[in-house]
Amino acid sequence: LHKEYRRQRQMCIRDRIYVVSTLIGGMIIGKLTKSKRYLWGMVLGIIYFVLLLLITLGVYRTLNGDSISIVTSLILCAGGGMTGGMIS
Image (cartoon, rainbow, N blue to C red; front, side, top):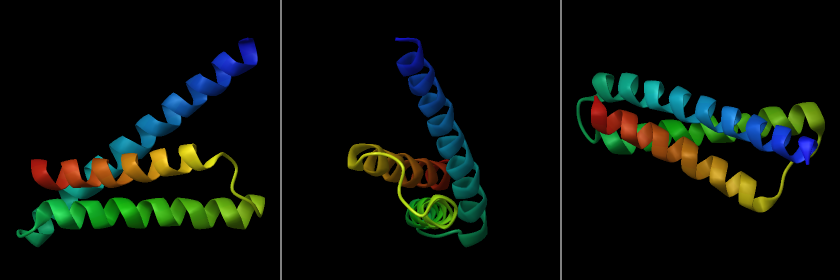
């Protein structure tokens, strides 16, 4: 039970970092582009996600996690960037 709780907490912290990072990035790119800010924010979030995948593959030589976790991370990254773009 303790290991599962710890893993869940680590995932929650990781997800927060993804959202905050892409949110700030989306706000910055939204201020720079001036048009279709939400779209550019989403693109930034997807690029961030792809970069995370490439780093994971480079370090571990495999994707650690199930497909649901990977898709959830993609949605969080894209959504955070898109939200940042709309806020800017």
